[in-house]
Amino acid sequence: MAEVLVYVDHVDGAVRKPTLELLTLARRVGEPVAVALGAGAEATASVLGEHGAVRVLAVDAPEFADYLVVPKVDALQAAVEAVSPVAVLVPSSAEGKEIAARLAVRIGSGIITDAVDLEAGEQGPVATQSAFAASFTTKSRVSRGVPVITVKPNSAPVEAAPAAGAVEALSVSFSAQATSTKVLSRTPRESTGRPELTEAAIVVSGGRGVNGAENFAIIEALADSLGAAVGASRAAVDAGWYPHSNQVGQTGKSVSPQLYIASGISGAIQHRAGMQTSKTIVAINKDSEAPIFDLVDYGVVGDLFQVVPQLTDEVNTRKG
Image (cartoon, rainbow, N blue to C red; front, side):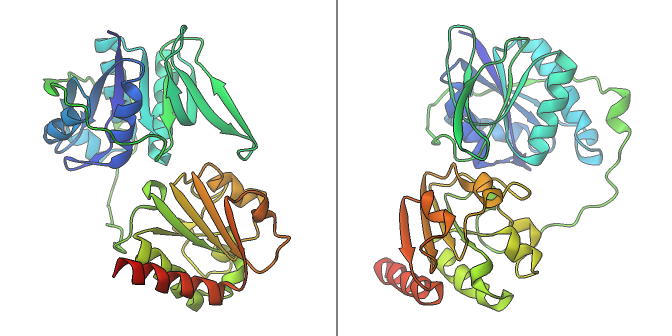
């Protein structure tokens, strides 16, 4: 059976959820072969094997930590040459998309970014994408070379599918460009205790209607009751009410959770582009004519300062 390369996103051996989702998609078109790079690479094998990886190509080298993405591109290129896969799947993060783009250029292949689904086709894997701010759904396939496809988080379920997960050493020769840009320092991001925004199953976002940084405590309280991540519209971020790292939208982060709750967000096209692929969308807005209501599965016309605390209390009551 044809093999599919899956780039492993991990932190010191702890595999992140989007990679496990990629393994689910990879099994639809072939046998998953995981590529794990850097410190803890071999430690990923047990988890990857439990979720369908028949092999784990692992390699650690100081270049992966000391320099930017080029060493990872070198390693993926080596994996492509060793395996001759039918596709290469990469998580659709900022780094993942850069790695995928560089790899596609290196191997002379086409690339599809931000796929939300993947299926087998007669002439190769077929990817589903949302286009023009999710106004259209398209199905595409790469017509030249080995398809390189980045996939949005929460596009597929995490499914257990025990496989061998045998660890094999990957031989990599680093290019001259690999060491051209060095990482001088790193600062760990302060943890909020909430899920990563782009990976969260539930996202609660606030917009202009929150009317101040101090009022985002209401949004955070609902998010914490649901075990959700907190997002913000561009208007709220530009006003300085919430960090730019939490912005959802075309110029912010793209999310695709199971549940998206928009509070005090009008629904401008810029914001919709970043969340329209959410599985279930709920909006709370006192303006019944707000564009967001054209998009939602459930809409509440009301004052968020009344509705959101009541919703939070109800969630906590049911949990209790």
